[in-house]
Amino acid sequence: MSTRKTSTAAKVARPSAAAKASAKARAVDATLVNPGGLDLRAMLERLRLPGLDASGLIESRRKDVKALLAANERAYSGFESVVRRQGEMLAKAMKQLEADTRETFDAQNAGERVSTVSRQAQKAFGQALADMKELAELSVSSNKLVLQALGQRLREGVDESKKRLAPKR
Image 1 (cartoon, rainbow, N blue to C red):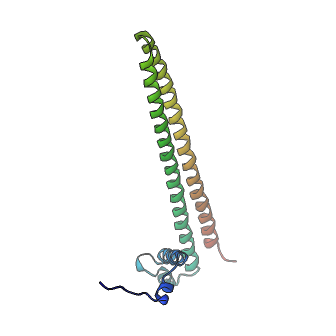
Image 2: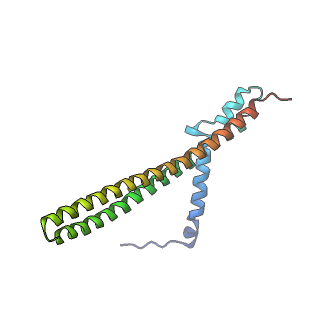
Image 3: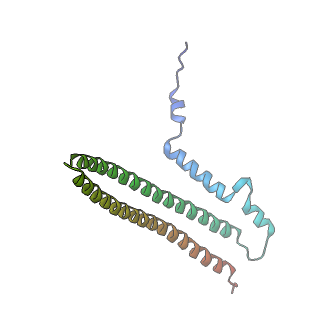
């Protein structure tokens, strides 16, 4: 059994979390500019089309991808909110079911039990409708934020294209 000593230099050489995040961001930017190993900027510049701003075009697409990534994160966050709220609603419903079951069995006679169950069923149905409405509103709110973000980038992209295609004076 051998023990291995690590030098101080080896410990210092490990990248920090910030350095890893920075490297990852550079890799994402490189992928956006150079997806699949293609050098799009060089390809567009070789075409040498008059009035074509290759860097501007690539920058615009990079912004599109970043907007899509941000919209995806918002959508996922909204999904998480809905799922979390559903879990809370389920836990509350289970507690209510337990309380209702006790109340039903505590009833003295059959008529009282039928009345109790009927009242509980009405209450549970009303709560289920309210919960469904709340979840729908939560989903709509989340989707609205996502669509607003995408709509904003779409407007920006259209404005960029108009500027790029406008005749030079």
